[in-house]
Image (cartoon, rainbow, N blue to C red; front, top):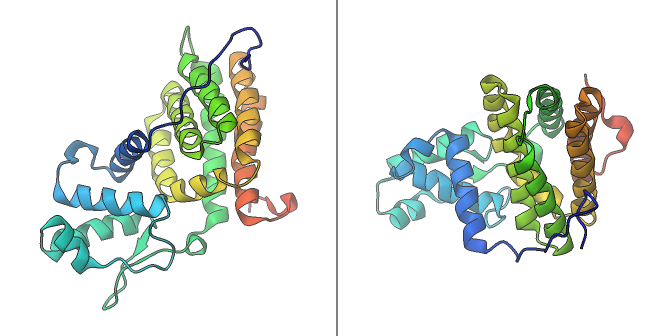
Length: 254
């Protein structure tokens, strides 16, 4: 099998083990929640557990999150549970209304269009910075992740594709070198993780996204800032349109 560069043989890796995927996703959650430096704390563990169940679809929009059951599960009082749920509420993953049980926020409770517009603008800026900043072998991790996306698509492995896509974005953010933009992207990314996972599972989306990332990588290699910006924003737009079923004509920045 020939990879996107045309002259290198690649072998499809085995499907990403479920435990490895969950551990990687949990670490990403911890970092996005700002608790990666205290991952052993009870609040962080509870937030990570609930957040993971939401992203994986075990807890669905509208489902109640039972504080009593969580307190029993983790052998604690309800106070750390409430702190963890309030942490998730800041990232629009749950709602904690007064005098009512917490529940998983619905996809439509999040301003999806605004969320994806913000992601598109930030990744467009980041992609231009990548074109300006990369040196030597900086793009090698991104090449590896594009290869992983291709293998995941061929293996119909949504989890592996999801993680390769996240890793590609993290490599790009590191090359871009703007810590403020990186923080914004992390914050927005946390709110959209379950939406991204859902969009990648839609028919044809992995193949389309893989091809888009191949083109984006080539734009980086050529330092074509304008093309890289357009492609990266287009990837976000196409994911939004796949999720909502809207016409491309609705993708207008207000």
